[in-house]
Image (cartoon, rainbow, N blue to C red; front, side):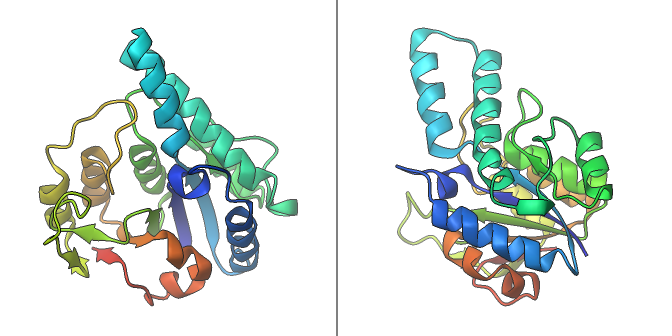
Length: 224
C-alpha cells in the first residue's frame, strides 16, 4: 500500500522538539516500509506561526510569510531525515516529482511546504493524488474531525466515519492565509474528494501505533 503520512508541525515542535516522538515514528515507519511505501509531509506548526505572526506585525506580505512557513516546515521534516537511518533521503524534496523519484530509489521522501499559498495539508493531499496513494493519514493535535471546532464549542461532536462531501461542507469557509491552523483545509478536502483517496484523521496519541491506524483500529475519523 502506498501511504502519504502528514504530521502536524505542532506535534513535532510545540514548546520544544519532541525528539522521542520523532524517533518512535521513524522506527515504526522503517519497520512498516517492508510492506508499505511511505511519503511523509511535516507541517510548520506552532513555531512557523510564531515567525509568521512576528513578520506580519512588521508588515511583510503574505507571499513572503508563505515562504517562511515553507522553510520552517522543511526544518521540521529534517528531524525525520536525521532519524530514518538508511531509509532517509539525501535532502528534503522540494516538489512531487523529486519525492516520487526518491521513493523509486527505495528511500522515504520527506517534504515540508512546496508552494506559496498552499498549506502543508494541501501539499500532502496533492502529493497523495500525484503519487497515486491508497491512503492519506493526517495526524494532528485534534483527535479527529468534529461537526464544529471543539476548541471553541463544548458541544462539538467527533465524527467516526464521513464522506468526502461531508468533510468539505464542514471545512468550507476557512480562511486561506499563512499560518492557518485547521484539521484539514478546504483545498486539501477538495483534492481528496476529487481523487477519492481514503483518509484517516487522528490525534497525536495514535502516532504510537501507526500500524493499528493503517488497519483501521483507531479513535479518529475515516473519510471515504
